[in-house]
Length: 154
Image (tube, rainbow, N blue to C red; front, side, top):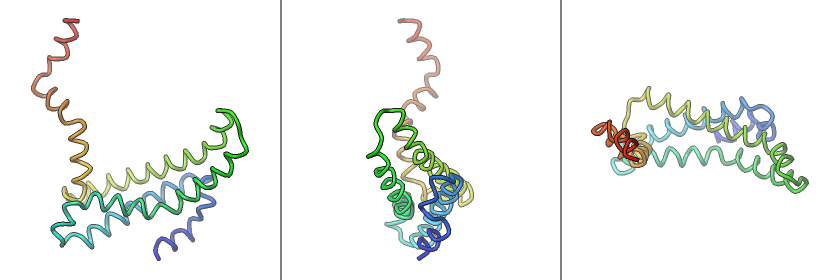
């Protein structure tokens, strides 16, 4: 219901021409997903441990109509062009629209992470980040001169 209301305000057919609309859509949908998960799943101990995944799922579900329309529109345009530069020229509006949508997600998620001060709401994302970059950060903390020594030996 709320998605239909927002889609009536921000028509998906006009989002690739006005990129600021995609930024606002990213802000609204990510904020809405964070608040819904906080409101509905905060009392459930099992589901609240995976609240970060539910936030991402809601965010994707909310933004699917815009993504679907943009991809469908780009497929129709893609059938008529040939060559790399003409493809880039045709698809640059959609690429920039997705970039602005993602930037809206980042700004809203950052705001809610700071404002809510709830570690479990973004726990899945933080654990993934630490699994990717954690070992190198810990290694650099305890052995800061190790890279310089290995660079001198080679």
